[in-house]
Image (cartoon, rainbow, N blue to C red; front, side, top):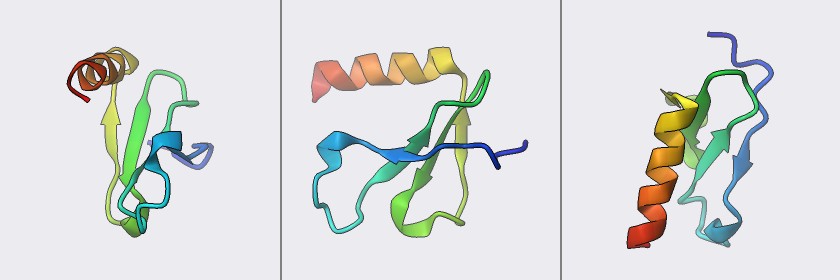
Length: 63
């Protein structure tokens, strides 16, 4: 998968957590990418946009 066009961002809720955050790129067609802010080369998870929306919806109900 070509991730060269990914535009990574941290959640505004991350605040100043000493880098204990994840970054998300949701600008590529058909995929949402997630990686560890502290280890950007350590691997990337990929989700379908529908699966990512489902995760966010669930996180909002428990968070």
